[in-house]
Image 1 (cartoon, each protein chain N blue to C red):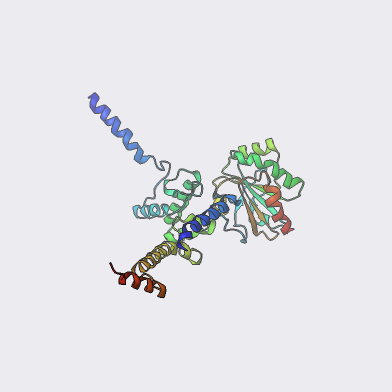
Image 2: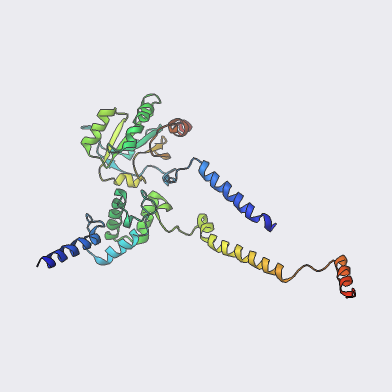
Length: 151
Length: 175
C-alpha cells in the first residue's frame, strides 16, 4: 500500500512540471484558436528578457502580452493582425523572426554572402595552384643550361 | 596580399568591437516606434480625489510636456524622482505621471513620501496603456511637443548625467 502511495506521490510531483507554465492563465475554449495563439506566442519576443519568446518567459509583461494575443485571437483577429498590433507598439524587434524588407536585406543575404566569399577565395586559390606563372626568358636560359649540362 | 588578409580581418574586428564597446548604447534599449506619432488614445482615472480622468487630450497643451510611467514598487523610479522634481520645479516642464501596474493607495503613498512632481496623474492598473505606448518596463519617460506628438523617449531612469546630456537638449529643441 505504502509503495503505491509513494509511487503515486512521485508521479504527481513529477507531472507538476508540465503544469508549471502559465498556471494562472486560462487557455481559450476553442482548441483550434488556442493552438493558433500558442504558435504565435512562440514568435513574439519578450521585451524584458529579450532572447526568450513570450511563450516561455515568466516576466509580467510577457504574461500581459500572452493575454493580449489570446484576446485578439479570440476576437477573430488573424495571426498577421496580432503581429501588426504588436509591431505597431514595439517595432519589428518584437518579432523573433525579422521580416524581409529593405532594411533587413543585408541581414538575410549575409549567410549567402559569406558562402559566396569563401567559394570565391577557394576557386582563386585552386586556380593559382593549377597554373604556375610561365617562365621568364632568363629562367628559360637557365633551364636550358641545366638540361644541356653534361652529367 | 593574402599574407595581410588575416591581419586585416583581425584589425577590422578590433575596430568593430571597440566601436561597440565605446558607443553609449544600451542593448536593452530599443528605439521606440512611437517617435513622431501622436500619443495613443487612452482614458485613465486620476490618483487625485475628484479629479477628471486623464486622456490624450490632456497632452495637447501647446507647450512641450513629459509623460512619466512610474510605480511605487520600482526602485529605479525612486532613484529618478529627484530629476522629475527638478524638471517640474526648476525647468518648469509639466510632468504627467502614469502609475503603471500599481495599486492606487501605494502610488499615492509613493508621491506623499517623495513629493509630487506631477501636474496630472493617471492610474494604469492593468498596464494596457503602457503596452499601447510600447513601454517594456518602468520608468520610461516620453517627451511630447505642443501638438501632443511624441518626440523623444527616455528609456530607464533619468539619473546621472542623462538629464543634462540627453533629456534637456531634446526639451530645449522643442521650446
